Length: 416
Image (cartoon, rainbow, N blue to C red; front, side, top):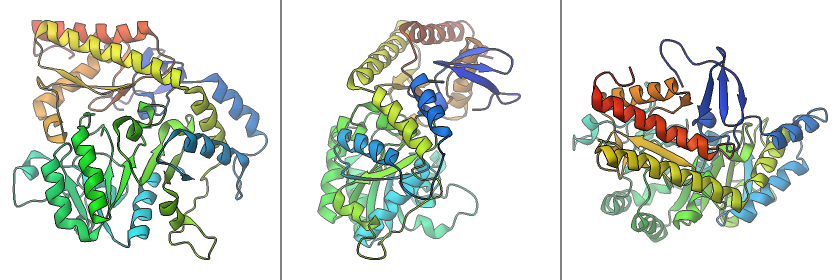
């Protein structure tokens, strides 16, 4: 997260707060991009990792620590029967896509327009879409994410609008013979942190079954939505799940889990696996121990308490908007929220897309929050931690109310 004129450099973290190199204390609504569900310096994790370090940090052989974390996740997440660990969410999504290809013998990927799925070419394509593209019927939303990306990648990616059943059915029917999977984040952060319509998720499952396509749920970010994850919360039944962030307790991690039948593409018990997978630091004991301790502390009661705090913040923000008739809205669920400079709550990426003036207004909002001692992600999901209190939530609402008052009094100066 950059702040003009120079990046914000951090000295340390303490619970719900960051302390920058100038000694400023900031309430952290970023939490390392939603990773730190317990905030900074969570003692049970710190103690467990410190105890482990002198006994070795990584080995070329398995350890019991990966088994205990695997058992915990399999017990909690209904869609996960087998699981494998990697080092990042990007790798988790990448290997989930590869597993779907190995299982179906098809190359294609269908994905949601504007959603973020890490840095794998077939997951990135269709992420950087703009009105110039979607307003031109001759252009595909399967646009490259960076200069030099092979154009052939776009030929294997089908881009679908979130919450649009007719668009889903039309595009999947057209591309079905080549599609290995439908890649979906149940509440995509970069596409607005918009709630999924039950009819849309039901249609995803039905059309995937109809054409023999696998459903891959990207829960790298949204696993934090409930004890059993986001797919279980919203009624999606994926064949594979990509996880990460909170399951590493603040250390690098990713995981691919799913149905035993599909996960057997990784198996080597009958010779060379259909899909080889490994990594130098995959399932390293530090990440496994930190993840287990962090997840054990996230009991059902802990998830409920965090969601209650999230509900209070979202309700408080909406009340301030309603009281002033301000042109803002709020999306999100559980421990996540996002503020939009839109009167109508967005329902998909296009509705959440920020034009130049809206982007400038949101940058001013983030700066105002920073001036109030709060680090608010600009244009992304804000996340809560168990270290936060009701007083912290009230501070978020108060900072937003103050911005709206300043905006009402002087629309061009608020937050500058």
